Image 1 (tube, one colour):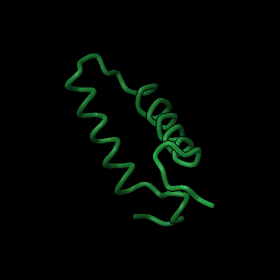
Image 2 (cartoon, rainbow, N blue to C red):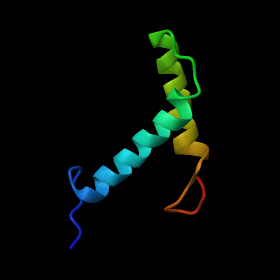
Image 3 (cartoon, one colour):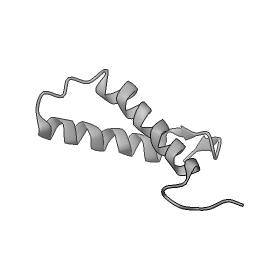
Image 4 (tube, rainbow, N blue to C red):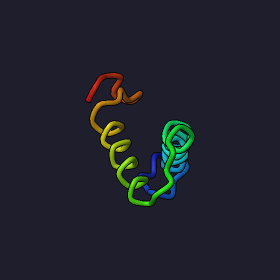
Length: 62
């Protein structure tokens, strides 16, 4: 039985995977000295992640 809840272990794993990517691919390589710059870089990162990145679930480009 699969429970589709934001607190289910399946969702927590997805969230943790995303957080790890943000940490390794954005925060570790970008110099974010100003909050506005950080917000803009994060928006750019999420656009890239959502629209252009190959996702393991679909195994194809969005």
